[in-house]
Length: 505
Ligand code: TNX
Image: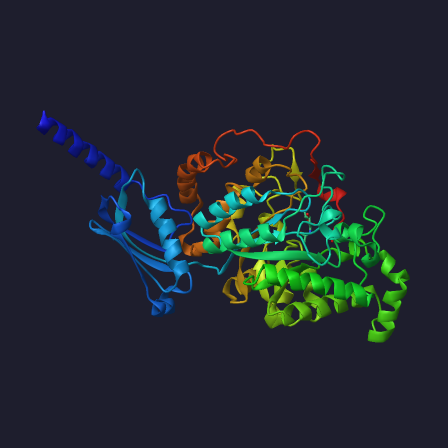
């Protein structure tokens, strides 16, 4: 009896070993170097040793690690705590049913900036849901959470000096302009920033200006600079000294809330959507005369230059959408978020100008775009953003060849970012449906060396991850099955934005 039991256990172990050895471990993002050495080990916390050797950053960079797993245990070597953290994420993914394959890994990211942006203005997302997102980001080695906190539909960040920003500006969302005020208190923000920090994620706040300002303008109409028929108070008044001071007060509080953010993003996008009234504002005329500004374009640039310098004076780089390129900000301290995929010249200009750059072109990085042609809700613009298209980025981006090569080789390109604009996302399930699994594809593109990327292989690993995401409570689109489209409850905003119905800019 005893022998038979031992035999059975032995056979089971053999089968288990064969399974783990034959199957390539399903790690996402794929490590730079992974060599299986045969056999498995049942790791306990005592069997995992970590050595932080600051000198190791010379070869492993600020986020890399080495991992040696043998029958006796695992040794993590890293130059930083961040590297060790990523080694533990890899170990967790390697371990299946308590067994970890013996292996040696040397791993470090392709890009320093591996980001995800969420718009919480069009529709609000409670902090508990953001924490679930941060957990997944950390698991897949993403390290920047870009928090789009203000926009026309609602102002979501508490500013102590200007309480109406949230009590009035926080009212409404894309589905319901009368929805009771939704916003994050400063305590909630500090808590979220700490939660992210513990997961080696930097939270980058965005306060959008001088456009997309209707939320703030509802609360403090004295600072409004007019807009269009559709968005009557789309802008701040760039000519009013009090308005600049108001915005600077806000940015000072932002800096206190996000002390380690490195970058404060101030938007700068789509200003011309609503700047028509600037020609008639006396304060703007006075500014033009004083600063010798010929037209609205020059006023916009002056505003962008002035506010960027203020953000720099707070000790942060200034982040801005690619519209801010010509403003004359300090390239060494400006991060350009290249989003207009149909304007590659903007990317070329950012490279030539010496700016730092985050690549987040609509195609394929905007996750509010459809991921399946049969889906009904979301954006399309001469195409959609299927999983494979996200995975292929940036190698397969439709850029002039010389520009693609230049961007690939340039240290100015900090990395990649996905953006989820929330016009069509009122619920956690809908946000997640648009985010996963595309976020895993982006994570691999941002981490894994280009030469090691392979879509077939990624797909096979993804098949292992889909049920795990589901087990963790994440709603995930299944690109291999026929999972139905997840849309919000009736009443929530839904639209397909065809290219021909949208103003090109
Ligand atoms: C453009 S991207 C915007 C957003 C919209 C998004 C929808 C950018 C800087 N501005 O305000 O939500 O398109 O895809």
